[in-house]
Figure 1 (cartoon, one colour):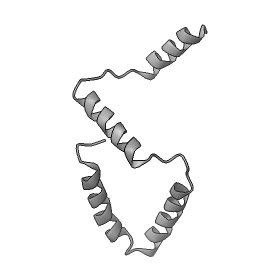
Figure 2: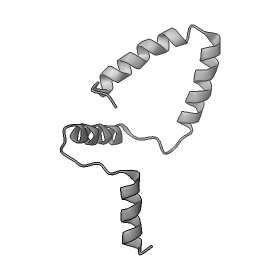
Figure 3: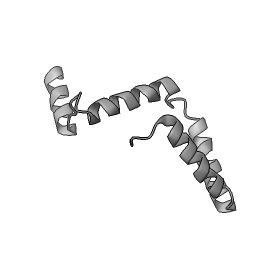
Length: 82
């Protein structure tokens, strides 16, 4: 993620979208992409995205610790006795 707010990112995407829809090939690609996205019932809600952004900001500010994939796997093995 970057330091832009959700609204700033939406505005930037809207500007980029306006440029892209001038090309028919890009319109076809966008239609296919959006079709798949809209059919995805696991998409995050606005509230969930805000939580993701909050956690990302906390991580970047050093308020939380991240873990490597190896650390996560090791912890899972320890918890499950594997």
